[in-house]
Amino acid sequence: MYRLLQDFQRDWVTEAEMTQKMIAALTNESLGQSVVSDGRSLGFIAWHIVQTIPEMMGRAGVSISFPGDNTQPSNAMDIAAAYDHLSRALIDSVMSEWNDDMLIEETEMYGDRWARGQTLQYLILHQAHHRGQMTVLMRQAGLTVPGTYGPAREEWSMMGMPPMA
Image (tube, rainbow, N blue to C red):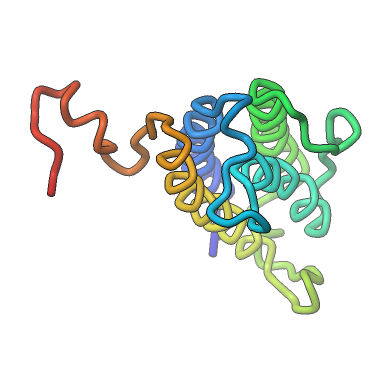
C-alpha cells in the first residue's frame, strides 16, 4: 500500500513505460490472438488495461475522462495512444487532487473497502498481471516481446549474450 504519493508516482512512471512498450509492440493483426477461440484476445487484454485506469480510479475518486467512446479500437496504435493519454492523466490527476493523508482513506471497491494507497498498488499489480498474459499471446502471434523487469529472450542477443535457459 502506498503511503506517499511520490512513491506511487515513481513506480507508476516505471510501470507505465513497461506497459506502453508492450502495447506499442502490438500490430493490428495480433489483436485477435487468443489461446482458445472463446478466450480473451490480445487486443481485449490490452484494451482492458487501458479501460481499468479511469474505471478503477474513478471508483477511488480520481477524475479522469476517457478519450473517445470506450469501444476497443481495431487499430493497435489507437490502443497505445489511449494508454499513453490515460497513464499521464492518472499521474496529473492523482498528484493534483490527492495528498499523502488521503492515501489511508477508504473507498468502496468491488464490494469491499480499500484504502486509496491500496487501490494505487492494485492498479499497478493489475496491469503487471495482464502484461504477463500479453507476453504469451504476443509470442503466439509471432511478435517480439519487449523486456520489462529484465531482458526478454529476444533482447539477450542484442546485448551480445545467449538467452538465459
